[in-house]
Image (tube, rainbow, N blue to C red; front, side):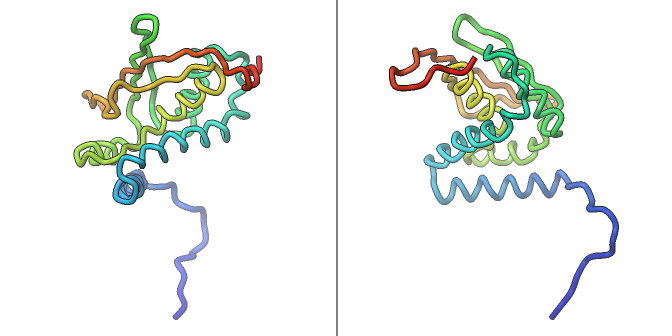
Length: 172
């Protein structure tokens, strides 16, 4: 049997409903196969993505605000979300908001089913902060607060530690 759907012309833009179906299926499978160890996949995913996009970010310095702004602008250009916002909470805390992320429907469904969540922007941001600024960030709760108007909010804590004696100093 042979067949084709080729009729010429440009490829259609990806449908967000299909993308959400794929995201749901991938993260459900991660949870089913790895359980809580699935979170290790998510954190590693952030490191890999940051390593891939870092050369395109044109970062002038390693200040946390600069790194987060550059990653946020990248995610906006890619159509992943409409906006990201953050606000310091004390010396070691941060309120982080993602506005209108394309994966909202999948994230709501995964959250309702208590499955491993994508946290795409969070893990990329945290990987960038760790690599460029030497700041390890953690979420107070892996379940974001889902607010009105498709805003997901998280509270982060920063853990600053001096570089290990064997690790090279961060590039400046």
